[in-house]
Image (cartoon, rainbow, N blue to C red; front, side):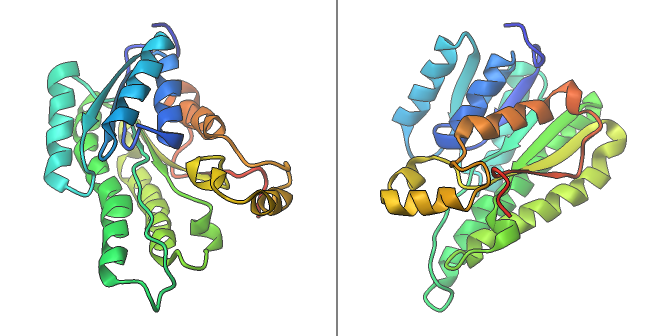
Length: 248
């Protein structure tokens, strides 16, 4: 398949649905060979594989929990064995266990940090080895508007995403000399399964806070990820790109 990412191999964590699925599809449309991970929903993973194939792309689902450091090493090793390279990594896998801090259990804080932050770190650590040898790589980490704004009941989630942004800036400085860029994308309020369950008045109130007057789509986020994965973004690194419709 032709495109600006032809001959590239891309890994998208948490790619079976929502924003992750849109990113996997977008990278496949751009010509990349896409490997995406899933944890709990094999049917959703199969649907994403089918959608990629119907779009004329190449994509494969592999089960992997990013909170498991050894599983990440095994995943990257498998990708290298089967494809011989790894060019683009999108750290999208994430969980939320929302609760006010006085009611939040320590294990709920730890679980969110383990997946959202340490998981992203583990994937970066494993992927950078082949990228250093190639002297080319693109790492794109998914953050969130709450890393900047904060949100009641999400102290664990916001902390994890703030950590992802700090990780991004630090790693960009470590590997920039090897032609590896590291950036983050911070979506605002996106029309996903979670927001679709909100009552209409709540969704209207959200939209009124956004200068563009609407919730974003998963495709809005995926388009920015596609740009950051391309040669066109070769001089962009250590940045957090906010995809939020102008929300402050």
